[in-house]
Image (cartoon, rainbow, N blue to C red; front, top):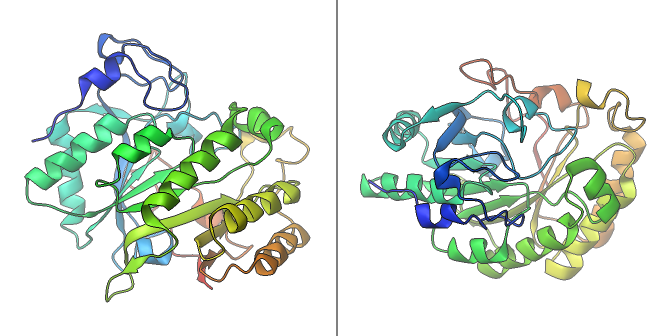
Amino acid sequence: MGSIDMEALSDCAICPWACHVDRTRGEVGVCGVGAGFEIASICLHRGEEPPLCGETGICNVFFSRCNLRCIYCQNAEISRNRGPVLAREMRLEEVVSQISAVLDRGTDLLGFVSPSHVIPQMRALRAALVAGGRTPTVVMNTGGYDRVETLAALANEVDVYLPDLKYLDRTLASRLSGARDYPQVATAALREMYRQKGSRIEFDDRGLARDGLIVRHLILPGQVENSQRVLRFIARALSPEVHLSLMAQYHPTPAVADDPQLCRRLRPEEYEAVLDEMDRLGFENGWIQELEAPTAYLPDFSRPHPFEDDQNGGALHR
């Protein structure tokens, strides 16, 4: 079985916050997570992009907490940096056993969701699975706030990168996610992912992704210009051939009820303006969501399966 790299956690600089706390002694930094496995859910998920779930779904491991503080997060019940969250402290063997049970239901896709603050734990799980004879396609589903050095070390361990690129506006990043340096950090991270994978995706004979890069962007109400800037960065700094997942699933939560923009859903004219920019820039690879899709993606992590009602709803191949 694999084991967690405790040396990396003893002076933690895994993510861009570089808190330098000793998580092996119970100290916690911005993320609020110690040195063990704090798991919110391990489940078969059918709501990802089509090549990341197919007909059988993907085994998603939802880690608790996060290294960002997005005030509009739809997973807030598991992702808060401070205070109670829905999660369970588990041993390595328990996590591997639960992952294996889900994989045995017919999928060989394994997604690690929001792992930026628990990379040693993610690597330990992958190593333990490989030691046990399992070699699933590993998908790193990240908010994009990652260190280049950490990503470089994962080059032979992550098959598909699935990062967000949320903002190219420092003030917006600070106000909405508590990370003013998000634009330069996330764009550097994407450049490293692109260096490793390029714009090509390797598909198997079932149309499932086995290697590559898919960049996600969630369009926020009132932030059309930010979304257009994000698309321009991807097209010009990386390539318009990058596979893009453009999401319209934003749904206001009680935490943003008083925000004049975030308190509402995306308007059709806002979505169309972003789609027009996507077309103008020449993007042809990827997926867009139907504007009517928001409620299809609202999880409830208090249930054994937080996505009981999810479908591929709204994810359309371009």
